[in-house]
Length: 237
Image (cartoon, rainbow, N blue to C red; front, side, top):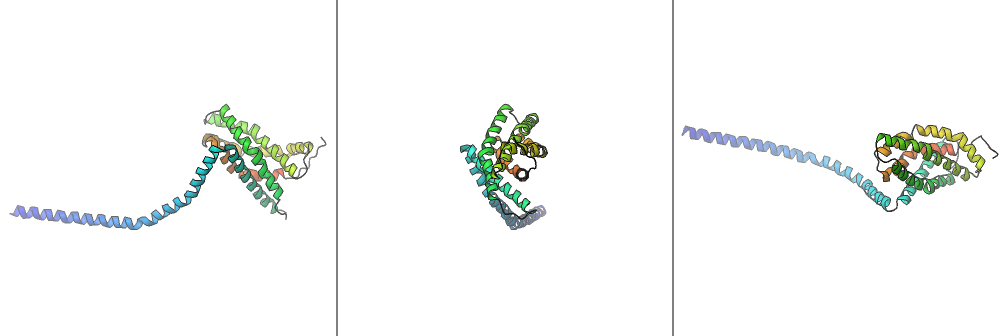
């Protein structure tokens, strides 16, 4: 009998302990439930903020697949026009001038008409000639970009700025190239090789022009200022 009552008491004590543990567990769950909404709300807000970017990414990717040259050209034109706008804002701090819309439009057009298509074909060719994403391949691509593509685009940019100002002749263009291209090229050496290494090693080829355009916002501000700077060098040729 004693053992029976002892067993019953032990069973009852075990039930009490189990109920106690269960109550503690339920209390913990209630606490978790009460603290979840703010965290969930934060995650929901973050997800909601990312939705437009995700939608833009899908639309842009589809446009790249359907019309790659058109998409890259329009992107380049918009970004470079915005860069020239920022460059003019910087220049206007030192002198009281109004926004030069003709210069802004010409900056956008040179990238819409030239840089967008040229970048599309350049990256396609350079990846066929130098395939892969190894360090050696990326360095080689960056080297040829600094030797061929970068200087040629800078020269075209100089020509457009002279045309926009009504000062273009072969002589004035050559003078502009001689006076400003070496400095612009040296400045680019400190900026573009790092951008090229990242783009050639990590970024998918179809997204490289967009990545380059975004990185070029700062560079184009500098280039716009240099391209529209008056040169004291003249030539009769």
